[in-house]
Length: 328
Image 1 (cartoon, one colour):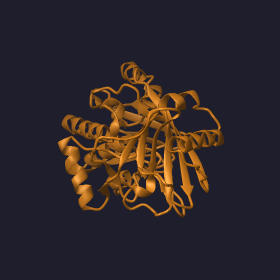
Image 2 (cartoon, rainbow, N blue to C red):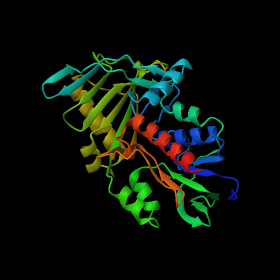
Image 3 (cartoon, helix red, strand yellow):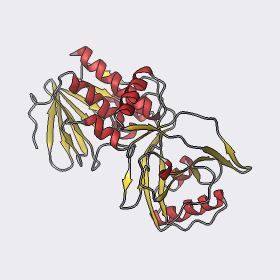
Image 4 (tube, rainbow, N blue to C red):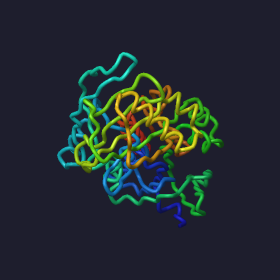
């Protein structure tokens, strides 16, 4: 695939929430857009692993809504059946036992978290399994090289990828590279467990404040999911950092044992898988919203620029789209 310069007004690299929301708004304004991502599908950390009997939201577990623009969009998605509230008892597990947490309105994608980004993309051209390996200024635009040998060209470039990945790509733009390199992101190991019967646990999700776990959730309790008993376990950021290169089976065994200890119940899954998120969460996110260098025709978006969270990523993409349109 070779895309002539005059075809793409904007190339968006990264098909997570920030990237696809930016692309959606630019496309709605008449811009010629394409979105590229190294993964096999859109969604980024809004990810869902599906099997024959169960599904697992193994990335972002839910999202909240406070920003007026985001609240309006969430309402639209609810009306369309793509978002639902997750009415769930969320507990806290610590050395003193199990405690209820404060009530909060939590939203999830239906039938899975990953569907939200696919829905936002609509019919925007999307190129999966395209890892950007090099980018260079080409006249008034950018030339892009991907690891599969494809190339593309665009007048404006949006990088909506984790900060460390952005820093590696921005070596020829030192100011932006330094900004991205200053933002640390932490990994997270996720373990997905399926059982042949419901576990006798009084809650459906819990923050874990001791040991190697940080979160556990019964995915089956979310609206629109298959009925098989399915749980997602997230490793603590510090533990995941220490064991980021560990073998998957060891991670499964260790986190499953910690889960069993935390709920004081034997845990015998009939299916167990693991996924490593190398860039799962931002240690100290910035509050810039987004970054746009009008002279270079390049912008940065992502939760790492806007306080973290799904809502922050959505708002970051919206803010960057507005800046690009204002400069057009």
